[in-house]
Amino acid sequence: MLDPHDMTSQFAARFDGRKPAVLARAPGRVNLIGEHTDYNEGFALPAAINRYLRVAAAPRDDRRLRAFSAACDEHAELDPATADLAAIPAWMKYVVGAALALRDAGFDPPGADLLIHSDLPPGGGLASSAALTVACAKALTALGGGLFEMSEFVEICVAAESQCAGTPCGPLDPCACLMARPDSSFLLDCRTLIADYLPATPGDARFVLIDSGIAHANRAGQYAQRRRECHDAVTYFQQINPRITALRDVDDALLARHVQQLDPSSVARCHHVLAENRRARQAAAALRQADPATFGRLMTESHESLRDRFQASTPELDRLVELASAVPGVFGARMTGGGFGGNVLVLCRPDAVEALPAAVPDLAISVVETGEAADWQEL
Image 1: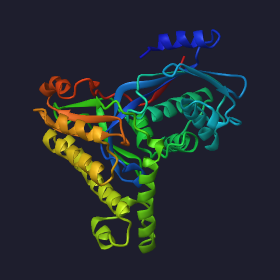
Image 2 (image 1 turned 90 degrees about the horizontal axis):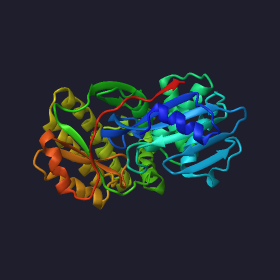
Image 3 (image 1 turned 30 degrees about the horizontal axis):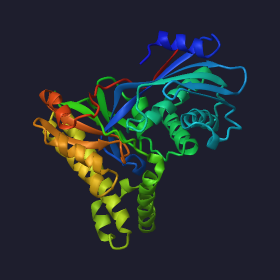
Image 4 (image 1 turned 90 degrees about the vertical axis):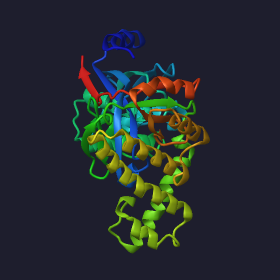
């Protein structure tokens, strides 16, 4: 990843010798546990990682956005107010989305030149799209002298991804980018957006990422279908109790009384979400107690639920979990992120890290180190 001096030099080379006025940075994240709970207003347990997306930006005199993505080696230039979203590169939709969402929130972002660098793999389930949205929104806000409350900024980033990039995301990813602290994870209440900060790992155990090599596809329809199935269940329960606004408000007893009236798919999704909310809170307790065995067991249970009840896993992810779990010293493993591809997260003893590559040859493996929250600086 380029340092600020390199970003400044490359910005000048790309944009007519100009100097950037702002540098913004957003980390990727791993979700330790609590999957598909955020848009159900439940609980999740994310941690930022030491892989980042950085944006160097300078204001323009007109309303246009001129951007270059080093990862894609692509350039795009447009006026966000008149842009045809269907005709622009996928990465640029997040840039435009950030500008339009800021405008809809009552802030008038300036035109800008933007240089984008990232060491977050797209489609890896590490919130690369959220990092791009957050960093661009931070840069545009800083250029225009704006200021938002945290909850407002999360809503802006969710709107940018949902409305312009076509990703029906929840608040987890932007919260993970914006609210994370060094050397910490946190239990996120996705209804209130309150964070309870926790140790990064349970005791001296290590979190390790295994890249399946299969890019997840949140926009391919499966993610949106799961959200619809959860929403259908909420709609049904609202007829019984209007105070129910999300699956967070449903308990096991209520679900058990109505399983015959619900679609079997919605029942399965409900079972996952209700149990996953419990697992997230139990995992937070395991972090506080430095208990890797309990945390690992919860990870394994989470993956089994994602596989069987939420059907968000793939045969490749399942096989990686199986192989990693068989390595001595591994406490647990699960898919992380929205699913349908991406990474597997493994919790293990430090001495087990070196044994993992032999169990899953030819795949990228990296020890997770917690990163920092999104930030920006004027130059």
